[in-house]
Image (cartoon, rainbow over all chains, first blue to last red; front, side, top):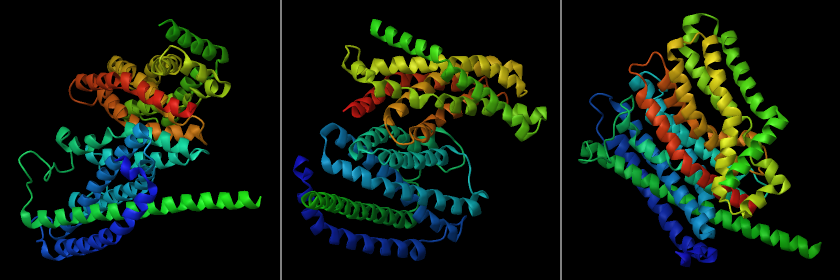
Length: 241
Length: 220
C-alpha cells in the first residue's frame, strides 16, 4: 500500500485510469437508466412509482459505502499517516453527504405516494438522517481549524467514532419492525426481489459505485493540484518578497 | 489512582470556586423546560404527554453548556501538556474530567428533573423510572461530550461545533431514555433501561479512548 502513497504515482495512475472509469460510468448509468425506466416491469402494487427505488436504493448503498470508505481512509491516515488517505477522506465526505441527501429526498418523494407521508420517524430513516448530520459534522470539523492538518486529524477521529452508525443503519430494519421495509437484497437466504427488478437495481448500484469512484478520483486530483499551486504560490511570493 | 482522584478533586474545586458552570446548566435546564407550558399551552393532558420528551431534550442541551470549556482552560495554560506527560494515562485524565463534568452538571439534573417533570404535569408514579433513566443516560452524555470537546479543542466556534458533533451521537440515548420513562408505553421500560446501561458500558471504555486520541492530536 505504501507504493501508492506517492502522490506523483497516484497522479500518473489516475490519469491513465480515469478516462476508462468515466466512460464505464457513463455507459453503466445509461444502461441502468434504460433498464430501470423502460425495461423493468411496473410493480403490481406500486405501479410505475417503484422506479424511484432504482435511484433511492443505490443512493443509500453509496451513502453507507462512502462513509465506510471515509472511515477506512481515516483509519489509514491515523495509523499509517498515509498522505493520500487524508486527501481521500476529505474529498469523499461531500460526495457521501450528497448521496445521503439524494437518498433522503428520493425516499420522501417515494414515501408520499406510497405511505402517505413525506417523513416518518422509523429506525432506518432516523439513522440515515444521523448519518447525514455525521457527514456535515465531519466537514464542519475539517474546516474549523486554522491549521488544516489538525482539522484533518480531528475529523479522522470523528469519522471513526461515527462509524458505529453504519451497522445500525444496515440492521435497523431487522431490529425494529417499523415503517421502512425489511432487507430484501443483502440478507440470509438470498434476495427476495424478482430478477427482472433485481438486475436493473444491481446495474444502477454498480453505476453509482463507479460514479463515486470517478468523482472521488477527480476530486483527489484537483486537491493535489491545488496543493501544488499553493506551494508554488508560496515559493513565488517568498522569492519576490 | 491518586492522580485520578487529585485531578477529579481539582476539577470539582475549580467548578465550585467559579460557581458558574454547573449551576448554570441546571438553571438553564429548569428555565428552558418551563418555557414549554407557555409555548404549548397549560392543558395538563397535553403537557403530561410531552413532559418526558421535554425533560430529556433539555437534559441533552444542558449537558452541552459547559463542554467547550472542559479541556480548554487546561490546554491554554499548559496544564494539559503536563497531564499528558504524567504517569496517569491520558484516557484516565479524560475519564476524570468527564466524571467531574457529570458530578457538576449531570448529578444536579437528577434532582431538578423530577421537580421540573412534576411542574410539567408528569405522572408522579413514573418519576423513579425517569430518574433511573437519567442516572444511566447523563453519564454517557458527559462521556460523549468529552469526545466532542477533545475533538474541537482550539477550533473556531468550538461551542457550536461541539453541539453539531455530539448531538447526532446522543440521539440513541434520547430515544431509549424517553422510551424507558414514558408513562404511555406498554411494559415497564426494563428493556430500555438495560439498553441505556449497555450504552453507558460501551461509552465508558471507548469514549476516553477516542477523546485521548483527539487530545494527542491537539497537543502535537
